[in-house]
Image (cartoon, rainbow over all chains, first blue to last red; front, side, top):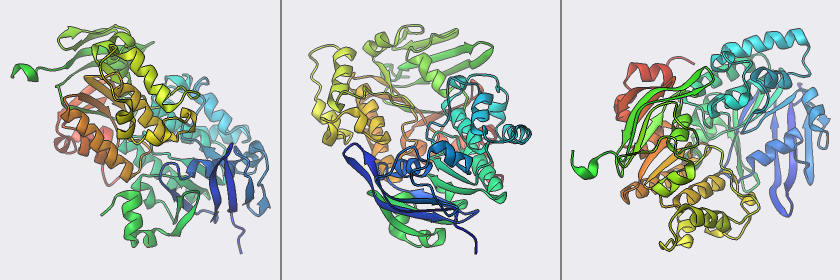
Length: 236
Length: 243
């Protein structure tokens, strides 16, 4: 039996006196892609930040490949194979290449060079200007850089916060295509998204409602649930 | 063309360079009063730069911008706000320690002539911000911050409102409410220039679209025609069978 990639249970977290997560939990197997749905304010970003260690939870537990990492520092989680792509995604004051190097800072140099070539081939728009500051990129190009930076360290599990927001339809397709390819190499994905196209990639779906998990199931089960389809994707 | 349908905004052969990079390479289009024009195109095609020049954040390197028949290229943003042009930002930056209401009050106080009756409560309610009016802006989630950014722009009573990716990150229910709100603004006579990637939203909101690629317009017309245009499909939409 394979060890689960990620298991989180009973997570409680918030900001000051405002509690956002109320006992949220989820699990992912190796090579699995899970889409996390939820209205704005439901706690998706907070949940991802707890999983990567940017927010210390008040209660509950996070296990990564069997190990308890609930209160482990973010850099140590990254070393062990977790990666996170925030909504904003990159360091504007560094060059494009420096940003990607930061994403791959724990990767051996030769492997990182190969990985960078591979990522630049996927995103020619940023490859052309690899020495330029990230601040010179457009909003959507920064998003591409954020994705490349997150993938540079060859993570086992990538947590993504709205990768499609701000990307043109063509790039949304390319991002889905590249994620599918990396998944084939063993990457697990947890993606907070509103874009219906990402369901093409998903094995399972969770909905986050008021800080706890509402629905959990396969994409097929989600499609068969009229209320969910309407609420989260506006599909008839 | 009847006089009241003369363009409110006219952009002619606009050029904006950053070093050797031509972000805008001779863009031309116009916006009519009460019209919602969609400005779409691939990432990096110059959409935000275009809004930044129209709203005075950047001066143009060449070409012209005319608002209500008068040249505005190179005027500072605050002067353009007084003339009737305002905008929202991709990444809103409210005053985090001020309350939601105070944020809008700052815009109202500096952005328009004193004494023209603005109902702040009504404005906040129309954007579903009234429950948070007394809270610091730091407590808003990302969508509420976008609505606050819109409220600040509307508080200055623009006749041309430029909207930069307001829909990104909104769920379908939120999208529908925002679309209805933008349509209502246009019905009241306001012209809108809307930068957006979500095709469903563009379809719901815009009367006409201009498609940019590499700093030039490559299409102007209805969205229905745009999606059948070979160049637009190639650079912006992507063919259905690939990816």
